[in-house]
Picture (tube, helix red, strand yellow):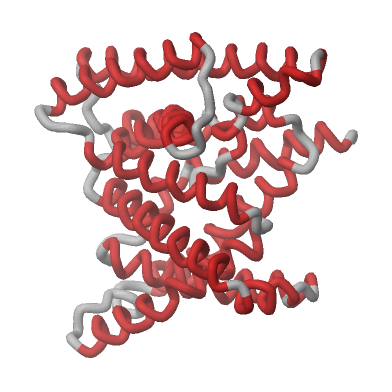
Length: 314
């Protein structure tokens, strides 16, 4: 099997695992979202520690501890990804899986807007068209829900901002996940201590299956991310950009087909507009990448289409 084909297999496996996350997190009920989040953080630290131990790769820690600016950036990234995880778990366990899928559909468009507003990147005409169609979709969905789809917007905004910071920090996935989880581990341990002291903890009190699933949350967090990292080393960015839509498609299918969440006609129209925006965005990104390969001078312009193509849905 060629390296690129192997990369596509790794990438597809990662996105399929992320796509079925709603089923996994539903199984963690009756634990509350914050309890699930705290356990996810703690077991992620332990699992990734074992991975790094096997890799004998701890030198990055000394560099981080010596660089206050880098440590501050990682702390901010940790807060954002913690907010993203908490919002996602809350959305899934409050029967709003469809809205969480929407959040990850619109994340690429949010990343593009952040590139324009924060990094002063310039968009091509078709990219602006995609953003405009995406904004129209949010307006249609707002009318359908009767309020802003705040879970979707919170997911897209938190993960988009997180991705922007991660792009600037440049840490490898395993090392980045370890440090971010370690930053969150202290408040997570404090919360779990308080929860146990007040008798509100579900961990260890529901069933053996529930306890094992909670313990495996770190494994469930790290494995898809490591597969994604292996894929990005072997697959062109455009290929990763196309694969990234597998996860929200599967999450949407889980919400509608497995959990029987409603999908009225106006909501379907809103999602259709999102998909049209993503098609425009993806096709333009493919054309930009081809132009960049054929013309070195076009590389900076093509780069504006790439940020959304390298984002794992955490």
